[in-house]
Length: 260
Image (cartoon, rainbow, N blue to C red; front, top):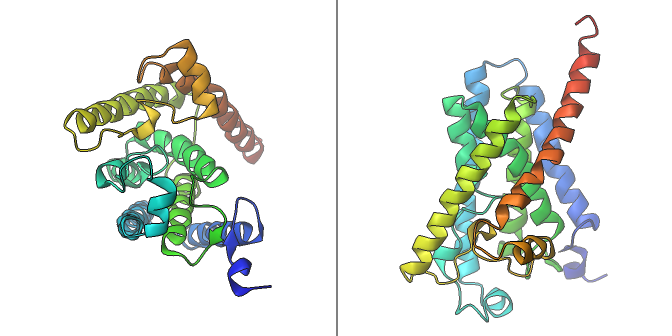
């Protein structure tokens, strides 16, 4: 088997699963080591991990900006790489910014938002990578950047729970949905600003402007063909997902404390 083919990564192949296993092991080991540490230490470790991930994100985007092959694969119809379309403002990576703010300010709404959107957003990106990120060797800079960033966001969101900083409760549902709507609307305004200023006429963070062919979003867009507004029913679909996750924690807590 050629050396290059040995390192090829695709969703759920051996290389993908080994990479996933590495990051889960990192989460488990760090959670065990921090179990008896002060809450301030746990908050700082998680916040610093996110900041390092954010720095890595921009390094990864730099390599993406000079990647000729990726430019022809992904940007052929978009006029080339544009930094204004590559900021950490998508649902899967905005949590690199929001998690540190949430844990340092002890803001339960932000931590709840990051826990649910960070896990779901990163998981969807990893399961359905964009063009140019599947079927290539893991050691390529853009591939390391893509999978490293998304796996770190995924485990950082889970770490909110495993580090003992946040535990989902049903009372979180209304505020989390409200936070999600507010954040999405703010991102929509950023999309509008970037587009109208001419910095990037295709800016589409959170898919707030258009679906980009996403089959699920297409369903809602056909019903409500209005930027941002068409996302509202889609956002509300998160309620069953969040409720199911919270139910799991509720059951676990009940079994952990049988006397209560």
